[in-house]
Image 1 (cartoon, each protein chain N blue to C red):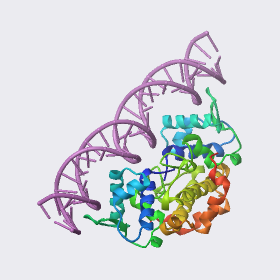
Image 2: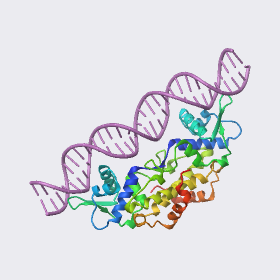
Image 3: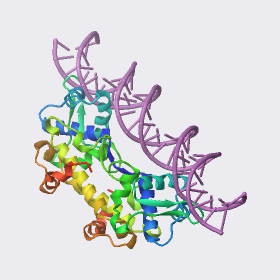
Image 4: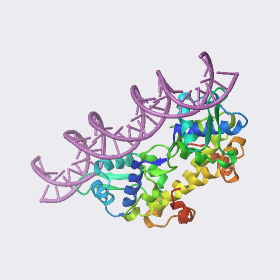
Length: 151
Length: 151
DNA sequence: CACTTCCCTACTGAATGCGTAGGAAATCTC
DNA sequence: GAGATTTCCTACGCATTCAGTAGGGAAGTG
């Protein structure tokens, strides 16, 4: 289960946009600030535009800005816009699977896993992350020192 | 975030082994029962052996069996044995990352996400799944009908 | 011995991930 | 309108991973 570079970059770019709310921000500026290859980032911002998350403006005073308030955009929205579905098993989404025999209860397990990922990523908005105030139920998880160790 | 075919196959194979506890089970039998390409499965079982999860026996009465009791093997154990770390961002594990500016709180978010995935996969044993009795805190998630829909 | 089953190495073919290059289209200032 | 700037689009490249196959050697059994 990996978070792709696209998803990581996309969220970081969106966070910059959430923080800079007056004028539009150029792709080049975002790329430099977050150390992201700028032509690669352009494609990512384009995906976000198609997904209705950001609006763009061309020309010398152009750039990108969020299409909605940062409180109304979840991290899940961003990830879905640039990668597909949040969680998949062998490339298909859990409900399309079917198992037999002692593996029957594997399906509900994958579903539970996905629900849990959703709970986190849909429950956190760009405003939450940008302000540094994660919701309680997420912050609590990150405050556990054990969560930071690699077993 | 995708569960690879390797991981899915590995867990299903492990569940068969958990259910069939008297004699060893041949790779071919598992492959047929779960509809998995059997040469591919052989490699997966080998990884699990190297990971200390299964023991193998050659010869005509040979096959594979679990190296520990099914209650003592978590789904996370299986996934880690065949893929690497459970969760990674751009291929590296969360604690090795570092973000600047408004993205600073993204790191604790990834950590919280990983902790949550761990909680599920480490908290469920092969015995749980094979018996069809998922732990309460997992079953509750899967019982929510909303968890089964694709938004 | 013959037979079975695991074990190991190598290979392939397709897809994906990550990024680059170059230019066309829009928008602004002068 | 000229020129500058920035987004937008298509295509390409390259390495890695994924999923699976092939063939044979090593160990165990009768």
